[in-house]
Image 1 (cartoon, helix red, strand yellow):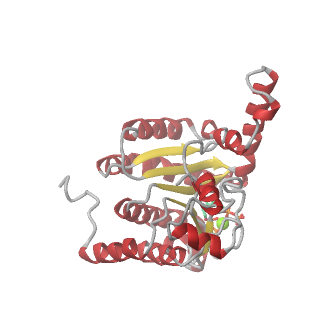
Image 2 (cartoon, protein in one colour):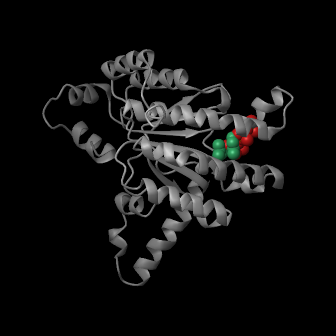
Image 3 (cartoon, helix red, strand yellow):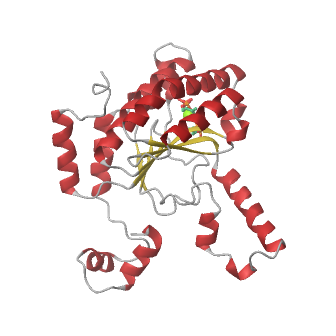
Length: 281
Ligand code: IPE
Ligand code: IPE
Ligand code: MG
């Protein structure tokens, strides 16, 4: 019974995953804007919340397969700062769904060696959710597999405002000098401090925008927009996104020739140094 719940790939998944590993890099950090729940439901003449409920199935499937593939970090944009302004009953349903998912899934995450973390204004969430979330984070904190990072009551601008405040306070208190402010200091004051920047950003629901998500961290992420609504997005679509990612040339502002030299293991070139700074590889 315990074993059944463990995250073992089927033979077919195993084959696809081996092929993916052989054909290129598996992204170390995948971030997903899970959009289109409402439209999925409306198209079926269902209330929007039915789409949110169905979307939980996609979360389960994508988390499971990221764990199997050896993805290091999966960040899911589940609720934005602006989403608080939606109709009250939709907000309450989303919070209840989150609470129930934490109740039902924490054990399984733990058994599958998943470490749960969260970013955002967590203190704005209902007390019960905060408690369950803190429990789940604490239960799974020693796990060494996939890190599942939930963005809740999160926005990129909210995060940047907080970082600027913290840094300004440190300057005022004489802890740091103005000259100490650089990219790495700013990164260290973001909620994602210690987490590598996303290699691949997936947005479902077909919109070509970032909707206030990870504004700093997405600087050099590869973007994949899927026309599918989030409840329809399952493992085969993730495989497709990763295949697409593997065919991109990440140039980080350089020219192809420099990138090729770096990838062919040439001498420690300028490209290698820039790659190292940006990707931490
Ligand atoms: C994403 O789906 C879930 C949240 C933002 C919480 P939406 O609810 O935005 O669905 P659409 O975009 O209206 O279809
Ligand atoms: C982005 O989706 C936020 C989440 C998926 C949590 P939205 O539906 O809120 O974004 P917009 O309104 O289409 O930009
Ligand atoms: Mg939306």
